Structure formats: C-alpha cells, structure tokens
Image (cartoon, rainbow, N blue to C red; front, side, top):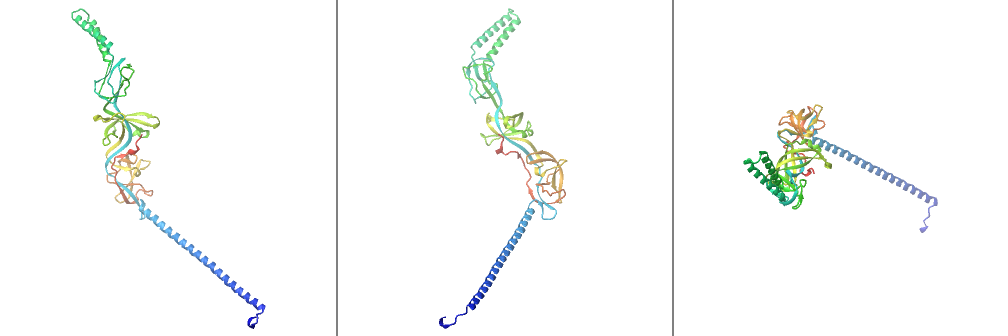
Length: 397
C-alpha cells in the first residue's frame, strides 16, 4: 500500500460495504414512505376542498331558489300567505273585432242586353266610363222597324178620323191603336239605355255585330253603394250576424275609413279555402271605392259600453258555471261565482257577480284556495278595449 500503510483485511472491507448498503436502503424506504404519505395527505385535502365547495354551492342555489319563490306569485315569505297579481275591474267600452280581407264589387250589377235582335249600328261603350240614367249606350239598325212603326202610326191616325165620322167601329179603332203601340214598343227595343247611374264594364260586343237577347253587351255597375265580399273562416262565422258594423280601408286612400254593415252571409263553404263569404254594404260617397279594389276590413262582432271584462286566465270553469277569485278588504281570496256574457280570444265580459272597483286575481297560483290570506304583488292595468281578435298583419286571404 502507498506510504507503507497496511491494507484492510478482505473480510473487514466487505463488512463495511454491507453496513453502508443497509443504511442506504433504510433511508430510501423512509423517503418512499414519506412521499406516499404526502400524496395521500394532498389528496385528502383536495377532496375536502371539493366537498366544501359543493356544500357551499348547494346552499347558494337553495338561497336563490327561495328568493325566486318569494319574488313570484305563490307562497310568500310569511307562512300561509299567497302572493298574487290582480286587476282592478272598471267599466270600459268593449269591442271584439274580426279582421279579414275583402274584394269590392258594385252595389248592384245589371247585365246590358237588347230585347230584340239585329245589327249593332251604334255603340257608346267604354269600360270604366260613368253614365247617367237614360243615357243611350247602344242602338240596333232601325230601318225596317221604323218603316213598320210609321205605317202603324199612319193607320191609327186614319182610323181615328174615320171613327170620328162614324166610318169605322170602336173595335177597329182599338185594333189600330194596339198595332201602333206594338210598333212603338219594337222601336224602343232597338235602343239600349242606362237604367241607372253607374259605371260601364265587362264589354262583350263591338259595333257592326249581329246581336240577340242572349248576347250580353256589357255590365252597368251602380256605385252609390258598394259591396265588400269578405272571406271568413268557418269557425268564426257564427260570431257574425247581419247588421254588425264593418270598417273598410283600401290602399288607394290609406288615411280614410269607410263604414258599412253586414248585409248577407253565404251558407256555402268556398272550395279549399274553407271560408264563407260575408257581404257588407258600404255607402260610396264621392264614388271613391271601385270594383276590384282589395279592402282590409274590421267586423265588429261584439260591442258593449261600460263592460266589466277580465282576462280569460282569471276565469275558472266549475260544474255550476264560472268563478273567479276576488281579493276582499281583509286580503283574503274569495271564490266568486259569476255570469259570463261574452267570451273573446283573450277576455270575457262579466254580466253578473262582480262590481266596479273590485280586484280580481289573475294568473291564479295553484296553491290558492277560497279564504286564503293573500299579498298583492302587482296590479295590472284594467282592459280598455277594443279587442282585435286578429292583428292586421294576419288577415284572412
């Protein structure tokens, strides 16, 4: 060995190494156990934190839900008190209005025809032109008719003079007069005149044609009044009766309203549209409304002055009829039987059982019972009408 130092014996060397190995293993196992315990502790701490967060979130959620229940109609914060919305019942005009689209036609339409046949010699017919009663519209060739009339006229005057001298009998004079009147009648048939003021339309002939009584010359439309033909769906037709007010508007005069009344209701359903035709007659001052115009119409199917009405969700159907809940002076709900006079899509007219100024519960909470203590959280505005059953954007086609 260097420096002359003696070398350790082999046994001593191996003993020293074995002792060092055992100490090293002991330290390794202790470190491993400490690391494992540290991981378990961290996992336990994480689980505890998650549990605390979950419990806290549940408590917050339950608190929010409780606040929501406090804020909406239903059970209030005080035991046994029900929060409700009400509407104060006040008299007001009530109208139920049905909106629909209609087409304007003449108030009366007369087909123009000759009562005899012949060549059409004269025609003064322009569609859309206005004519006066008695104005000549068309005339047939009168050559032969005029000859016959002049002959009959001459015969009659001759017999009239002879009768005055006692030269012919009264019967012969009467016969001559009848022949003359017949000839005059035949002459009148060759002239077609307007029987009333109106507008010409639907021209069917031209000058020079041979026409017969079966051939339509055209149509004379009266515009003193017009009809609006309105298509109404089957389920709504039972609301409409003759005499109900109708208001019409046309695009040509957007700021004007034309008022009339229902005149007739057709009993026949129209094809695939499943509509029935309602006719309303409207005075046509100034002749502004013309056949063929489209009209937006409002039919007043029901109206009442000083009506007491409630939203339909306030009514409850019972075996005896209808009832609603009224808030009494002691803030208790009273189930009140009522009589219903009319039901529209959203509101009903109450004809008996409530008084002006009373507060009726709307959107009735499920837990509300007769006699329950209530707390009013909202007072809705009273209904002021008119009620439009269909918005104008949803007109029937």
